[in-house]
Amino acid sequence: MRKQVILILLLAVNQALFAQFPPRTPTPNDTLKSVRILADGKLQFSIYAPKASEVSVQGDFPGGYPAKSLTKSAIGVWSMTTTAAAPANLYSYDFTVDGLKVFDPKNAVFKESNSGFSNMVEVPGPGNDFQSLKNVPHGKLEKVLYTSTALDGITRRLHVYLPPNYDEISKKEKLPVLYLFHGGGDNDASWTTAGRANLILDNLYAEGKIKPMIVVMPAGHTPVQGFFMGAGDKQDPFGRDFVQDILPFIEKTYPVSTKREDRAIAGLSMGGIQAINIALWNPKLFGYLFPMSTGYFPDAIKDINQNHAAVMKNPEINKFKNFRIYMGGEEDIAYKNNLNMMKMFDDFGIKYSYENGSGAHSFLAWRSNLRDFAPLLFR
Picture 1 (cartoon, rainbow, N blue to C red):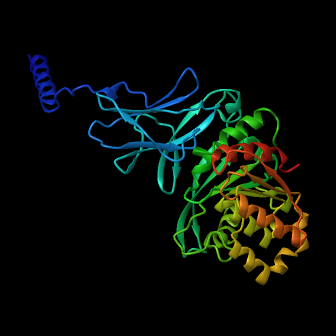
Picture 2: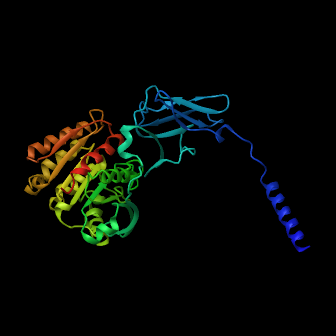
Picture 3: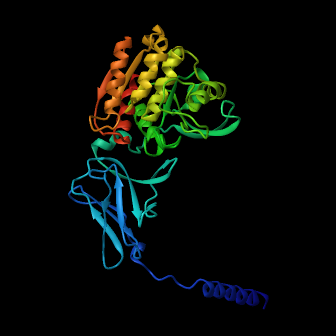
């Protein structure tokens, strides 16, 4: 009798729940695939927005800038197909619905930045192989908090990549470190979401092309006012944070080498200038410098010539084991600034190498740059 009463109560509760949550009416969004790779290699973007009046999409896919308009169907699905095929790679995109940037809820692959999230689509193929997820030993990716005394004691976040078999390797030797900086508008997660740094390094390790290293990816933006693209490490609050707090924190927290030849610094765009400023103003700290898609603005070059010539003439700068500048082709927005910066380096007798590639001012270039320079490190 008691079991029957309990069963009746459970059935009543179940019916009450269904009464509160009536069945939902199906919509085209239930089965919608927001990005399709068509047979001819073109990308088709779709989003369900039946009440919208204007929808567009933009990104670093072929033809993705400026934004392209989508066309609405009778069932409320907006769509657009690219005019050109997308070569194998990883592309970012953003939908805009009636003037508001909208995250694609049908796609869980995304990029994190200071301004929010962007979706990503992967086109498989040989050209994408170096940055794809494979069945190889994987490193660890840690989100780490630290206190910045240079920035009035605030708590800051950075990402740290530890190589495969880190626990075993770190018992035997001190590891070298690559400090890898993001660009303007991005954050410390961007190099592993959009940049796929961890997967690129995993694959290079599996191929035996790189030495075990720790990679530190800090947040280049700070809440403190500063000119991130100016000349010198002190005018940039991140520069002060890096030298005063990040570097000592990493060397206290992880088993890393403190030798100059075991430290590398690299960065893209804003992060490229930050890497240059920190390395040239503190050359004894680093053995390697790899700026990507960057260059001083004319005012900064004028400032250096007038006020920092002694820094540029420091003979320690020409003791870098490798100082290589990367550019994403003539369409890279930093192309002209970089030419002016290299001329300044030439005038001061600073030795460097230069590689002008493709991909413009995007991770299409920077992921390839990382793949190219990582095997050069700590040899």
